Length: 315
Image (cartoon, rainbow, N blue to C red; front, side):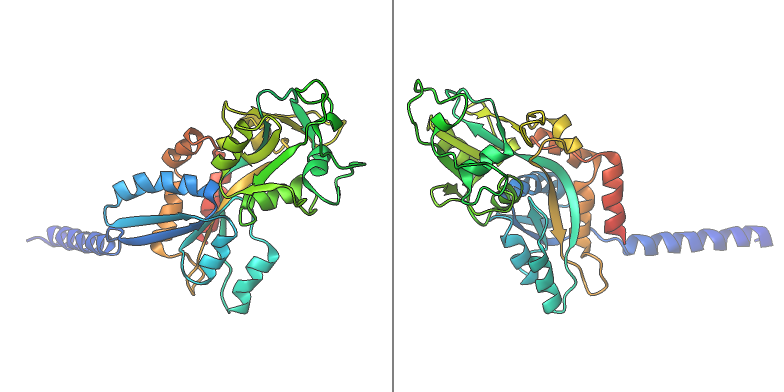
C-alpha cells in the first residue's frame, strides 16, 4: 500500500467512525409527551400529535384539554411536559416557578387566533363595540359605557321581537378558560363578569347554546363559530371600523379581540427543553404542521415569526 492510499484509507475510516458516532447520538425518539392546558390550543396539539406519532412510532402524546389555567399548575408540578394556552402566562403564574427554584417554562407562539362574538341568526345585530360588550357582560363598565345593557331593546337595532323588551342572555366560558380571561381583559377592560353570565366549559357548548336561544349572545375561539350563529363585527370604539375575525384582521392585529396561541415548555436544569418536547415543538413550527393550523381554522405563523420561535427554542 502506498503512502497516499494508506492516508486515504485512514481518512475514510475516520469519517466512517465519525458518521457512526453521530448516528449513535441521535437514537429514535421514544417516550410519552404529556400536554395539559387550553381546550382551544389543545385542538392544534392533538392534530399535530397524529402525524408526530406516525413519524415516531416509539412516541405517545397524551393531550388533556382542561383550560389554560391548568397549564401552569401541571407544568409546575411536573404533570405535563408542555402546556398549551390561549393567553400568555400572567406574572403570578410565572413567579410560582421562581418560588420553587425553577426556571419558568419557555413561551413559544405557535399560531394566531381570535375571540369571536356571535348571536342567534334571527338577531338583526351585525356589529358591536367593546364598550357595548362590556355593558352586557360586566359589572363596572370600565370600557366607558354610560349604563348596563340587559335587554335587546336597549341596543340598536332592537331585538327581533318588534321592540319588545327581550332580556339579553349573556353566555361565555368558564373561569379556568384562557378565552374567559382574555375576553375579560380585552372586552371588559379588566372588569368583573356580572353574575348572570352563563359559563360553559367548552367553546362548542357556547356556540350550541347561542344557536338554540334567539335572545343569546356568546363568545368563543373564532375557529369554533359556525353557520348556526351570526358572527358580529367588533369595533374598538364608536369611531373605529367594525371588523370581522377574518385572517387579514387577525394576523394584522387590527381585530380588537385578536390573540396568539402559545405552548409553554418545561426546561431542564441547563435551561433547555427535554429532547422529546423540543422535537414536538420543532415539528409544530414546520411547513406541514402550520398547514394543519389553517385547516383547523386558525391562522398560521408567518415565516419570520416561525424563525423567531425556532431561535428561542435553540437557545
